[in-house]
Structures are given as C-alpha cells and as structure tokens.
Image (tube, rainbow, N blue to C red; front, side, top):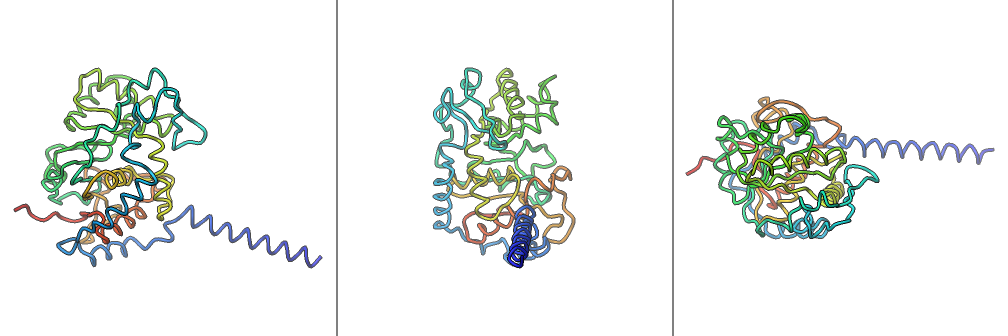
Length: 334
C-alpha cells in the first residue's frame, strides 16, 4: 500500500515537472530578459566604430549553415534539386507534400541563379526603427539587397530604406490579403511589383499547401505581363533545416520570421552581412514610441513568431563581429 502511494506521488511529481518543462518550451519569453533590459544592453554595446568584423566567426557560422542547410544548393527549388516526380514535403504541415509534375517543373529555374559568392549584402527588415534612420544611402551601397514581404519603397521612405532591391520575399498571405489572391484583376499586383526593378521574388510556395496556388498565380501574373522579375520558390527542405538550426540555438517559435530566414540565407551566401530594420520593441533607443513597421503599426500574431528571441540571437552575432546590425541612425554620408 505504501509502495503504491509512493509511486503515485512520484508519478504526480514527474507529471508536474514535465508540465513545467513544456510551459517553458511553449512560452520561451519567460526565459528572456525584459524588453527594456535588451534595449539597455544595445545602448551599452553601442554601434559605432567599436564594431569589428570577425572573419573567423563569419567562416564558422557559414560552415554551420552549409553543413545543416546547404543554402547554395537548396535555398530555392530548382530543376536540378527537384526533378520530375520528387516529393516536396511542406515544411509547415505534417504528412503533406507536392509531387513535382508537368505543371510545376517548368516553373523552376535550372539551378541557383545567383552569382556566388555575394560580397556585401544588406538584409532590410521592415521595423519602425527605420523611420528617420537616414539609412537609405547606406543600404543602396550594398552589392546585394534583400527585402522582406513586398515593403513599400515610395518616395517618402527612400531616405530611410533606399531604392535598390535584388531579392524580395512575398508570402502567399500577402497575395491573398492585399491582392485578393489574384483571382480577379492582376494589374494592381503587377504594377506594385515594378518598384523592385529586375529582382528575384522569393516565395514559399511549398511551405503550406494553402500557399501553393496563390504563389503559382503570382508566377503567371508576372510571366503574362512580361515582367523583368524572376520568381524563385523557397525550397521547403531549406526552410525546415533553417528552422531546426535556430531552434537548436534558442529560438523557440511556431515559425521563424521571414527576416531571420533571409539573414540565414545571407550568412550562407555573402562575405559581409549588414542587417537593418530588425527591432521588435515598442520603444527606440531614446525610449520614444516606435511603430511595428516603418510604414504602419499592424502587429503580428504574438504566438506565431518569437521576435525578441530572434533579436537576441542576432545581437549576439553582432557583438561577436559575425554580422552587423543597424538599429539606430546611420552615420552621415561623406
């Protein structure tokens, strides 16, 4: 009788410990410093001349990303890595896949179209910290500029975010919400894409099954309009492996942000990486309120991404000289 009671108590304690562990896994924010503490840390570290590039750190992280994720070969779906009949498993769903067929195979590029290695790369997030940053000219000096989720590049933002684009992401949800899934007129979509010149449009067409059709419609809309843009579909194996990589480094989220996917890609392909507009906090370095995006204040679903965790990881890379983060005003151009 006493043995049964002891075992019952032990089982209850084991269950309680498991519940606590699950709680901290699902809600990792409780392990993070407060937003104010992170901002104070950024202020203490500073971002001026004290930053030094660490080539050893750059090489090490590139090797880690190459070993886990092979960005040079796998960042986009190509005819070479995804032949006819290959199953592309959706990285955002369990047990669902798309089999490459006569309809989709012709849409893939032959192989990685980028001229590697890329030299100086700028990864531009959409954070409100970019407002009044005067980083536009600094961004435009990069050899290769990556942007997130079809951001506006209209005249009132040029001084802060620049004009040049070489690769820009487009989530299928944007196609659905902003352009009604391209089920009606496609003119607004095609016209808006002219802001990105002759860049690559990078879409996760095979991340969720619901995103495949909108992505294919976006491809045909550009093709039918003789656009100068080139559509690249993100390879789901690359997205999955990058998510697994950052989970192993302390980012616990249902899904990584588009920005962190792009930074990972840049770290795997570029000699030097500078990151702009990554700031998930409600105040800037002067403790003034800052909008979520530089063009609006629409907040994301808080349960979907773990933006503060991502920032902490990137800030650690900044401190070690592996990449450079700009979170304040850029220095005046000489």
